[in-house]
Length: 272
Image (cartoon, rainbow, N blue to C red; front, side):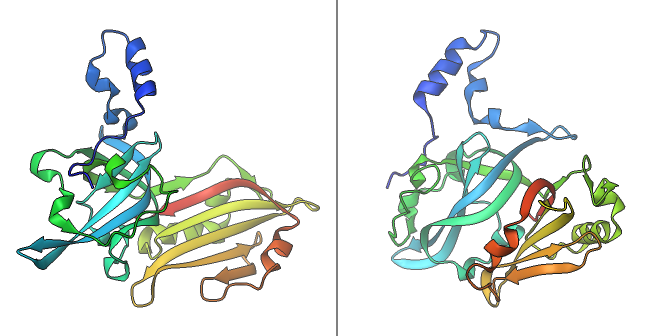
């Protein structure tokens, strides 16, 4: 394995882009910093998805003295990034439950700011011992050496709210349907889930609306991933549900979904 992680560069695209850039722009405008945007405080924020992890031993004089934990991230601009400085607990991951090596990992979306690692910040894989489990061929972004090492400087909770829609005959259901508003407000306070997604559907024959609420969370004493999916009518009554502990029998979900059609995403919350 190569010592340093290289930038993922699509040569033809970058060459074409920089050839046509007006001469007033400097070369640095063609690097990974383009994937960032400014929040209201002027901080550059990048949106990405955690697609894998590495967990390795640090070896000194033939003995394992510590561990190193890294996250592989793909940004919305398809840049491939690797960070070693994010605390697993800050993104609700328990590394004790994860195997050693390089692995695919669906860690959810992440909004963060970063800078390119330099000098001693760059982790050299010759200092690590990892089982060579070989990443799957479909690993997003390619093998580890295709990832640019970064230092994450800030992580933000990712919250989306759709207030430009009507449901159950009511405008802005997140604000004006009491049970739904109470539920979403509670998420911001307790943050007991790793992520929550709320989608609005319609029943094709009647045009009535129903709400799908999907949650995921970590229970470190049991499993790194637990989930629930529940369906509610306009009054909040539970009409269908399932979880990782009680998966439905084959065909049950398909039968339930047969007369329903997705209208829009209402809300999502991803704990970072």
